[in-house]
Amino acid sequence: MAGHVYIDLDGTLTDPFEGISKCIAYAMERLGQAVPPDTRLRRFIGPPLLETFGELVGNELAPRALEHYRERFSEVGWRENAVYPGIHDALAAITAAGHDCFIATTKPHVFARRIVEHFELATFFTAVYGSELDGTRTDKTELLRYAQRGRPAGRETVMIGDRYHDVVGALNNGFRAIGVTWGFGTADELLDAGADCLAATPADLPGLV
Image 1 (cartoon, rainbow, N blue to C red):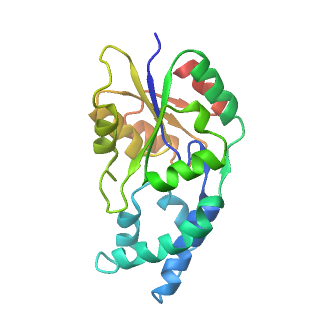
Image 2 (cartoon, rainbow, N blue to C red; image 1 turned 45 degrees about the vertical axis):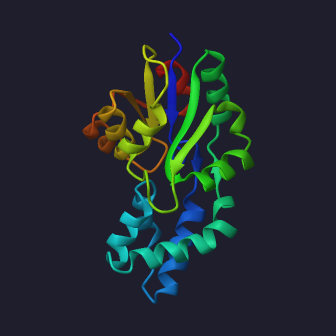
């Protein structure tokens, strides 16, 4: 039966590491802080940025760091991104099967929509759901609850993502959770969070949905 399919953006549809890591580095430099190595920065792709900066520079400086991050991200960082190979084909197969697809990302929706349109993904999605610039709906559970409001009951709902936040948000809303292992989370992270199954490549997704 056709259902609702919510899909994360960063680390699931696109690889945003170049843009996000450069914007984090820019923010750290503006605050006079040491920039962490790329190996450490990788684990910050996915969680809300205010949480990330809280860990990197402390909660007091985190809002300023986020402002500096967005200075660069809004200009160039959002374009320093790439769609994972096979994603367009996977989305075409999922939508051809009759499923309604939605973006569900904690990235501000103003940037998420820009990215989805720029990388020619918009045609596959009924709507794009993201957070607000003021921090509203940066929690995946809250975001998915907001996205699903008013949608007809009785259709299976799935969340696809690469981090534990995606899995926890799905399970808290009664959705199935599919973890993807080509992003920034590990298989252990996803399974420990309660993912129903894992996709090793985008080609696996249509069958798992």
